[in-house]
Length: 446
Image (cartoon, rainbow, N blue to C red; front, side, top):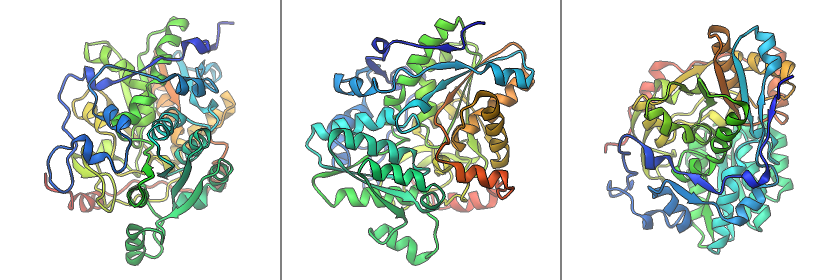
């Protein structure tokens, strides 16, 4: 039998992150200060991020060195394996070859640790004592909790309330690593109180949780804010995924025809696909596909425009594909994809037709996840299942193609969601166009 796992040694963990901004065939629109409406300068971000991360956020350098202290922690789970899904291929009766990069082997169970560790490291190095953050499904909150524990930092996580109740064991994991977890919206911040005054039963959103975490961070000199997706430096750290994948595909003797990942804010998608973008813009013949939920379709139905990253309008204005900063998505079980906007880098690539995007319904992605688990053995997170659904569709309609996707995280702490699916208690929810238009009506004028 041919090899089905393609492994790298620890010496082959990337020594540099790749910055796709250096190779874009178009100019990115700059982030805008929400007060002055002028392009941001580094000092504008100093209240929420350490200067080292601000420099990475604004960098145009192609390669940025990874400190040895970070690579040493990466060694706990990196390099991650590239696996061929031969049993899924057999079940689908496809002539396509399906590979997946398995990021679920990290201690937190997802790709999120790739940026959590650097963010904790740079904050610690600049004397910060505590980090605040938001989390949707809990993957990011768990990852930052692990990283803060590793570097001796305190951590407070504002967890979207619907996920706080849907996914209690991710909350338990954060507690084990020493973090405080607050259901958002909460009474602990002015932005949270404002939401609850308007809607006492609000189930929350990432936009609300971001507002609470940012507000909390700026109140204390020894506290900074950490973000799990969307921003350039976050996606930069994630490129270890794609850089390793390139080496592993060479070991497998393959060139991809399709590269696929789920997308919410864009971190796993960017980390997996960005190292391939340079070849794509030079004319290489493969497709890059982002897969999002039909209940939160920022790429496929959103507007490419400047918008706030949070509901309280505390963050810089970013040009991105957005459903509007006031958008509160329904309580679908892919909590990590419930965000109103998408990374400016990913959005610009989509707007310039370098990448494609599709959306999937909730019932379809759980059906795909169950098939994957029955054939390949590992239970995917509901977020990851979006990519699997797109892979299955391609494998059933294409012949002799190499299809590669990012298995961004496992679903072992998402069992309540799977129980509801198997019991027939979940339903599809495609966000109505008139509701999207309503949320987009209040976009800031830039």
